[in-house]
Length: 216
Image (tube, rainbow, N blue to C red):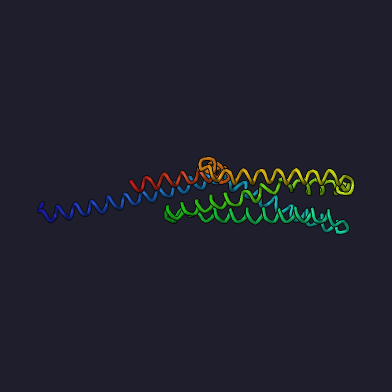
């Protein structure tokens, strides 16, 4: 075999190896995306439950406050709960859309960015759903009592005011703790991971693994 023929054979072999490597990397990428999406299934299930339950309660509380228009404080309690349920549905639908955007046909880096955006979104919005319950349980109890014909505000105003004060103190304490945690990087990172959720963190780990493999 002449030297030119040998060079051509080596170039052809190199092209085949590069093509084989690219195909294997694409296959690994698709499997990594599949693992990431499977690890997000508990989150997706929870989001669907959040959205459907919240949607049902929107109508429940709307019907409640419409039927109590003759009592302004009780009506406002129903409206507050309905507004919360609307926010819960909107946030849940937004997260579902972000999960659906993760596409096996897109580059790893793009899907990593989408997961990072999902994680950051959950870190930002989780307090919006959790913190209000320091106070929101009070209108819930008032609405439940009103559904049974008991005007808790009129019957025990001192009790309601006391619970509001306690709720404000608890909410302020939580906010102060969260502000203090910002100056503690390890604690803040742990809180962020908790808010992001184990499903998102495990999905990000699956894509990070294939990204490290591709860079080696």
